[in-house]
Length: 193
Image (cartoon, rainbow, N blue to C red; front, side, top):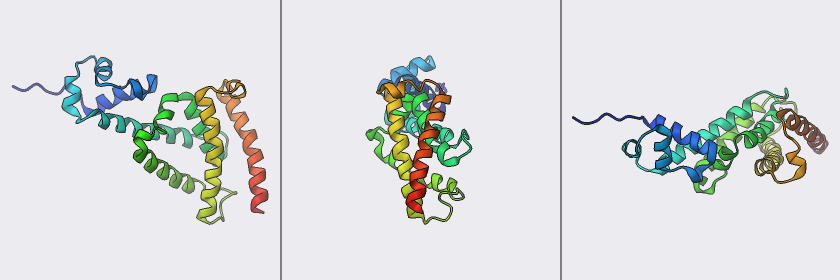
């Protein structure tokens, strides 16, 4: 009589996700997943064809976590909330942030970043700044916002820079981000006028 599988693919991906969340993709191995599950490596290899399959599922899930951060209302302004969500994701989920920028998964990350842009454009459709703009102009504004957010997020994620390290609470980050966004808004409004 054949033994039943002890774990599902979802169990294995969840265990792998927790490992990556705590210590990064470089520490994701079949042995680490087995340890997390309290098992041998055999059930892992009976559920998946390769570690790459697990890694890709984790990278996709990291994108879903990012989306939850970006759609959570914090400031009352959807444009600011998208950028703030990105920045806070980089702070709270350091290793997941690195997943969505790992060139090893470039095809997945490119596809999900394009989907993220389309969702952002939908969310900005009724925003006062972009309401009557053609899609190309809206994309340009979103890209400029992303450049600012990504720079801030990368500095926060890496811990480089005294000024960024002083932003030690979510509230401090939100206040700083709002102030910087006001400056950027002023420049965008004058450029569009």
